[in-house]
Image (cartoon, rainbow, N blue to C red; front, top):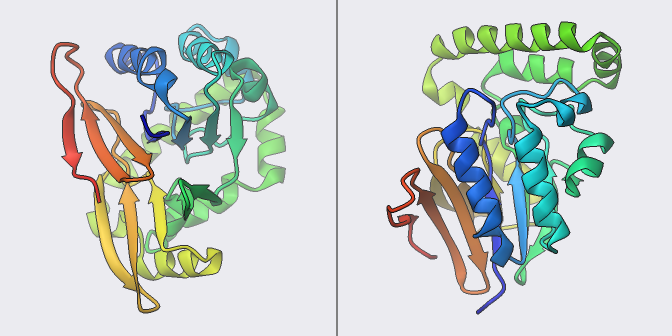
Length: 256
């Protein structure tokens, strides 16, 4: 069997969605254990108030599941998303995962590949980009993490409601990535292949970059089912993971 690397993103795990949590834990116990490595490209959690969350009952099963996977020998790399950007050393120690910079350039089975969450590419959404700059500011984060846990939890829940209202009023194309931003980022890092999440629009995009073929793979979210990108030396396959245990894995995209 060729070495296989798995990619997932936008799980938005929380106590309110136990079926998806169960699917994720099953994925960690079986599919991920056979992988060469697992990359989680942002929004693993619905929200993250700081690393005190590792001990909260809502997140404890997910943390334990990742700890068991890394202890079994599968390396797991986790990138910050727009919901869980406050993960830090405490998360790494509790799970055995390694936090990954965004963007990150990796050699993926012989092909230089850029990994991103994807939200920084949504440059047409000016309102979101301003909010992103605010909450990614180290000074804002220090001030936020100095607040009591209960207050942080309330603030984050308020942010989520504001985000839902704001998203509902925006045109879909504004919340998608900007192609010029994509090309500029790929050119900056010297790659012809990009993998990201965030937009919840799973699809492979093929285009020309500086006269050469380029590919951008968008990962799917885990709202109605799971979504995993499997990559080996032969190519990549994006698959859906149904909630029903008896259902067969659904191929969302053929190998390229």
